[in-house]
Length: 213
Image 1 (cartoon, rainbow, N blue to C red):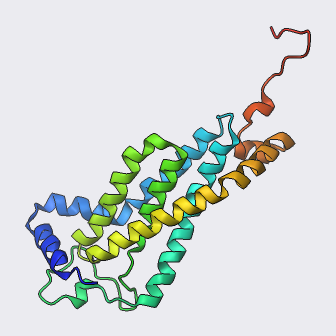
Image 2 (cartoon, rainbow, N blue to C red; image 1 turned 180 degrees about the vertical axis):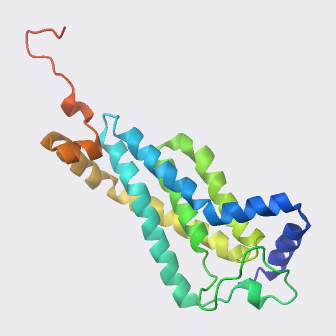
């Protein structure tokens, strides 16, 4: 798999952009994954107020699926041993961020795998979030090529790996985790109810023949 030509085109384009554009991409490629972390927290907090235990299950599984995608990406990276394009491609422009050290291999892109997994897992938890998470994941993947530390095929396969693993992981475990969530809510333990949200268990119930005020 060789996407060196496209890598050169993108990195040459990166160096032709204004300095503020380069700075934005440098910041995003370094700190952008934190945006997914904030979304994980927001989706989980929102799920606690919903009646369905499945909402909590999906919210909890989203970061777990992302962690699984990262481990898989790192395992594959250690097997493939592809050198970074910022060292391997002749005539390449100097990367906008420091080229990772030798032994920090290029294929697949961990950042892209994490972003792809987070985008899919969050979209499964809250469907309309796909309008935000998918563009953010694509932007993260593109930024890794833009700053010069990955080939296009690294980020493409990273996105596919992360997204597919997240979908299988979340959909496969949503049922069992929903059951556990429902049991935790029914148990009434303070810590469990705080984590899963009260759900319907904490809501007043009508007694037969009685009316709530």
